[in-house]
Image (cartoon, rainbow, N blue to C red; front, top):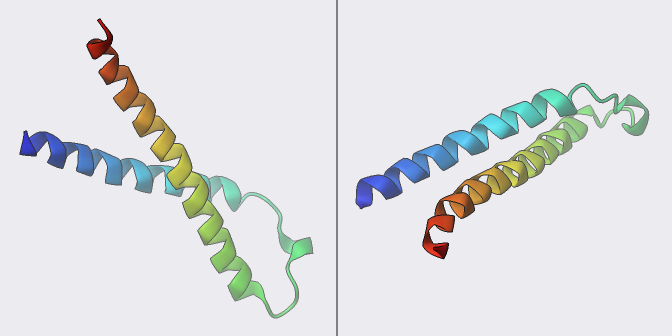
Length: 77
């Protein structure tokens, strides 16, 4: 029982990191230069990192929840 919880925790952490990385790669392709003020590049980079974390975590959570829900369908019948 506890090994199952540990495996799910590991899968969740890997999923979050993977989707954050994918989101980071996608977000960095967007040209934010017109929106960034001169001298504020560091703050803009941190904001982009936070945006990638929020979107990546949300997508990962959706995927993990969907997998869990599909496994819980066994209890329906």
